[in-house]
Length: 393
View 1 (cartoon, rainbow, N blue to C red):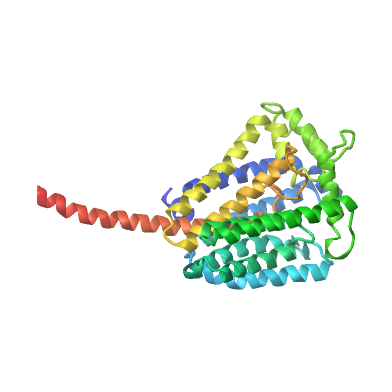
View 2: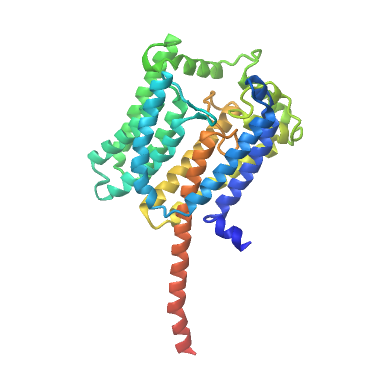
């Protein structure tokens, strides 16, 4: 038991939640991978499942290794990581003409926006910390906006939901980090108004296939389908609703899904709907509770952290994982239009699974430092108190 404790360092609550989510992932992916496997040439359900298991194991290894690193090192690493992220995002746009993935032989598809998501959050935490003495100045606010905006602008053309997720998370970090609230509120309102007007124009036109916003027609179609659903259409969204309705309170049993056999994205975007189909509302509530507990653990850890950089890093990484989970679950139950966001640590593994896992590893690195400091403080307090007790006796 002691050996296991030495390997799995950090916040045990976060470790337990991640373990349960990964177990749910293995069961859910095994149950839903069939149609996707048969639709791809040269693949089998077993082959794809084994690949997913390998990603999960690699994620565990990444978390363990990163938890052993002094979290302050990530501040310096984030500088290089941020630049590398920008280069990768530019490369993927140049190679694919605006796509999301780069194909790597014998590995699969690599999604640069996922690595950019983690590095940007850590780099924003570093920038906020290093500018603490001038955090209220307009220059600092603009610098942060440019840092966040560069990544957001490169991600946005082909992945609107990820761009919004990244921007909102980092923008919230700016508020937590202490930037001038007047600038923060005014900029937020301006962005909401501008974004709303742009979408209204795109929605009125119906589609746009010019320039970098050639996917705007897809965005408009998704919102239109959400606002005006066609119950007779055999779409992913409708099948997800039917799966949830079939699940009821306690579900039809693990492995007894029907709708996963008809959905191409049952193992990814709509895996939460299949979980509810098989385990009912009870299973859905459990999954939601796990993510909420994970976020609570991150908030508690950020509060306990003595350093600003560690606190902001944990808060940012905790937020992006929790927000992504909420978006995925909201899409599955029909509260939001389709976004393409996966369910963290449950959906079929890939770049997103691995690099969000790296985010958990960084969180655990901060947790290790917090635990060491708290133990040292308790030991120091005990040494002070003990002589006083001896004198009294």
